[in-house]
Length: 144
Image 1 (cartoon, rainbow, N blue to C red):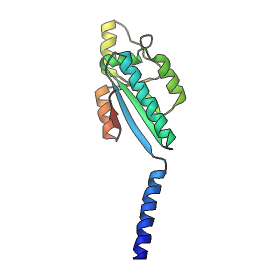
Image 2 (tube, rainbow, N blue to C red; image 1 turned 180 degrees about the horizontal axis):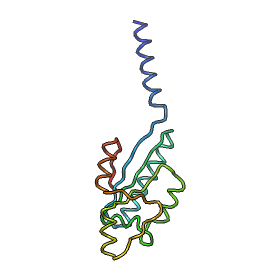
Image 3 (cartoon, rainbow, N blue to C red; image 1 turned 120 degrees about the vertical axis):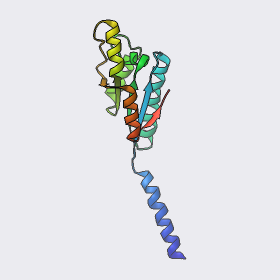
């Protein structure tokens, strides 16, 4: 009986210590609206998530994926959150910004010239496909 209690206690402690070790979390944040409030909420979600996980000794990898009207979040000279994106990118190497190539191509065609993206933006072939890939790879999905 005492041996089984000791074994149970040891197993519980080892299980708890597994939680005490820093864990890496993965988060995909979706932006598809040309609304500064939504864009700021997405950035707030990223900042608050990072703050929380840092406070408990964990790491978080965050990718913000913008497509459709939300791509304006990443358009140079048009983004209402460009300064926040620049600051966040400098402060945290674990945050990235994916720009939908389909939307970019359509925007550029409509504008009659190449639409320039923020330097922080990484072009992906499709924003929707990127979100699917991230979720298939274990990313939690957040839509502000």
